[in-house]
Image 1 (spheres, chains in turn purple, red):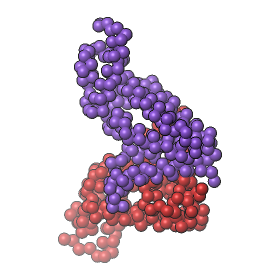
Image 2 (cartoon, chains in turn green, brown):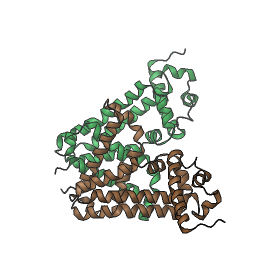
Image 3 (cartoon, chains in turn orange, cyan):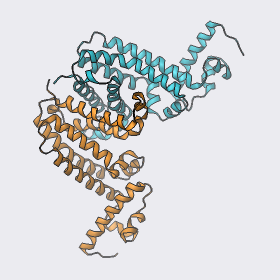
Image 4 (cartoon, chains in turn red, blue):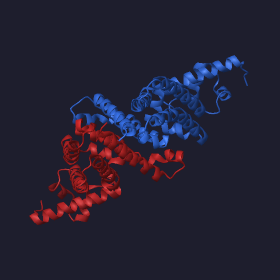
Length: 212
Length: 212
């Protein structure tokens, strides 16, 4: 077994993540072999296992890193927004932009390969990803709950995430199916989709924060 | 070509619809042949075409009939509810119950065969179904718009339907996937799903009708 210096280990670890991310985004997990990932990094296929126990571990680390970037960006966008309704709208918008804009996450959630990835993950890995999500998403919800006297103040934060995922999240997932709906307005699909998304954001934020 | 009396025609037409509906619910459109439908009615396969131009026409008529029953039932449930928020909640609840409870519609929307059915429909037939939906769903929305001073009063009724479909409709479609979400609460999947559905109904109705 080849020995690496700490510096080499760090570099290889980093390159495996970068290469893995690019390949997954471009070809998807089903078409990405281990050799595809190790070749550009210049290590032999078996050497991969000195860095990750399994391919799924690499995916988990890519996901966690993307998610960290997202929560950092969201925090900076939310800071300074004091009105709870406006803040919740911004939170929803960040989530939607992340789901739509991040190619890795989108591939993972929108394409069928996603199931394969999930099936290859252990229950510990799935719990790890979920905890990461909760750690990133629950604190901003709690902040809003403290600022608002609306229904959100009495909800379990996970319920708020559930509402977001079951409306805005599913909307992203079904984006391509809004063609027929757009035809009802005799409008361009993309425009109608984004108008609907924006109305959903404002309606949910309103329904959750406005006092009666 | 066998000649039928008007009375016979009516009976056969009715029986084709009833038999077609049962077979579609039990086996789905892909596994339901024309012969499966005509045999129990006691007519020869080619005779079907004296009653419907194509199998898709039978589906359209089954759908329209189910939908008529739904709108009638909804009208009676909404009558007498004067508060716009409460009325909108009831409207959403009727829609969800219809989508979940009607086996034919559920099969049509939730199972993959749906695509085959849609693909076998002409654009005229799809427009016919859409018009039927609009005729049933838009008037109750307009009633609520007149009663409310909230954001709903200024929306295109189709946007309201879009919001409903993109949250409550997609939630029904993805019902089976709420197992993991339920595990976060350490709860029974069905309970969590219905709690989430109920929160979605109240949040949307609130966001659309409450005045600020």
